[in-house]
Image (tube, rainbow, N blue to C red):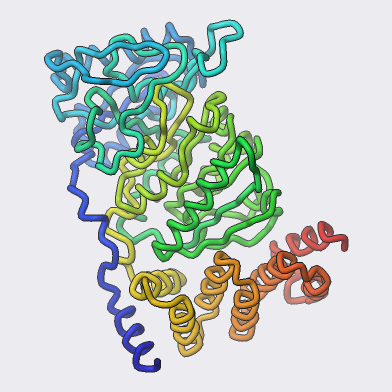
Length: 520
């Protein structure tokens, strides 16, 4: 066993690419991207120019369209100010041709094939801050799934339809196809649409920069999955979250899985969060709303709710804007009621993302309907795992995540006990308490709670850092509660609150909150 571990450690330090992005064909998406801005909205032209320069998008692919400066617009305004002018520009600049109509396009609620089809010159559309994101309802008391309100962005994914559906949505032919967008079937006339928008201009620039840096340095950290313990007609949402957690585990990304029905409590420590998926409240609250919480740069975060993107330019309303305000580079949401089945399917999205798709490709590949309520907030060209999983060794605190990922991927197929023993042995020899913590998260994800508790205690014995100690004890108290050992959990929390080392730690409030929830 010693030689086996030594071999693993040497291999880890080399850390050659472990999971290539499935040998996906390359695609120069930037050269096929058009950026739309609103000249009448302060800052919109400058943001468009900034993004185009950072992504090397051709200057003649920047389009200024004067439109409403409000969040929403009427259907008539959408047709006159956005859709109509874009169709004319696409044809006049020979980005699309009138020669090849769309074939076999599955439709719901109307719409007919277009005489416009792309000539492989434009496949991506980026809307900048200042372009409206909602189309208002006109119909009075429409039937369910026949509503005429929509997301501007989702309507523009179907730009190639000459008569797009106004009532209801359009079945997405790209949904769950295993191919990258340029090679997918039956997608002629469709666009990948993303939006660079948020509470302020500085935030949009930060979203662009963080995505580009993460592509270069690697996106290393942990995933957070927040279940809501729903069932019945909501079971699909729970299944998507659990499936996402399993995809992350297989990719060597540590997962903190919250199994309680409530959101994670305020001040709950979630360091180095690069992926967050949860549901189901209408406005941001709990741990992610804590003033001290920040996502890791380049993070992708989504909280599923019917109106999660009803407001995207407010830092504290709904979910989309607040998630960006707390540092996420990408989020998704719904501008009006989408119905669960037609929202972003987390499991498909995360599978495609880990396979090396761009954010835009993965998001629309995971969305069953177009001309509907969905929105992608962030750089659609962002490809966090485009170079493959496990290709970066990491610097500083990232090193533990890279080591963990490398060990899990290289030992895939080995008995579970061997993997955890290898991780534990390496962490002990190198005095890396965080690596022990990540191994504990793995055991907890697998519902091996006694093993997870032992690993957390072991990690505590190897660190003197107050923030780290407090986090480990909070995690241990939570596992004790799950283990139906509430008495031990309460005792541990009381000790935490009495420990002067934690008086100035923000996460101390989480200990107090958890203890109160358990009856004091």
